[in-house]
Image 1: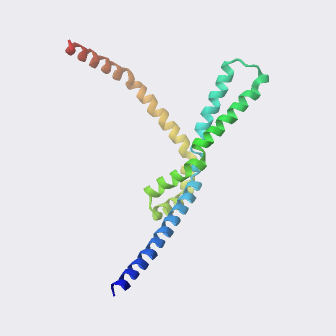
Image 2: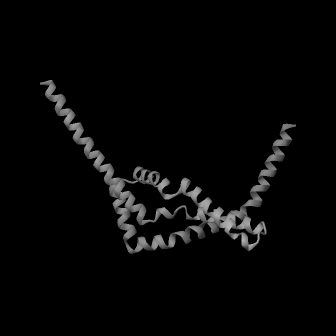
Image 3: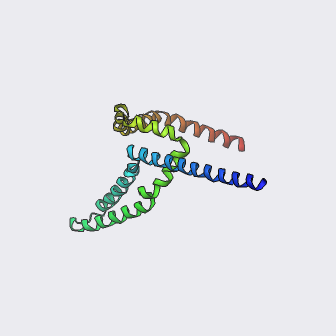
Length: 166
């Protein structure tokens, strides 16, 4: 009788683990759809652009003749290849899928997909990069107003600490 229970329990565990794997695969598949929808593969584009600009700036600073532009382009291509190996979509996609599947359950991912397919979701996707940049600029300008006061406080603290240490 106990052998029968062991076989039943093993069968139940096997079937349950299959369902868990199927659920995990479905969750990951939906998450990949969501990441495609939000164009997550473009997240690192600014990094590539910054590196390209760095090489172009160095080229200009070197005052190399235009005939050497092929050298610049060669190094830019090599830099892109290095970035592809480090932060290319194929490299970061598995981590992104895990990040999102750990954060959002399958139902929530489905709801996110529905939202980003909606007119409002598409508008959010279109407007968010500019809003993020403008928000960062606004914050930076506001922060710049506080810098002199914070620097003065640091200086005052250093004086006070120095005076007490004597």
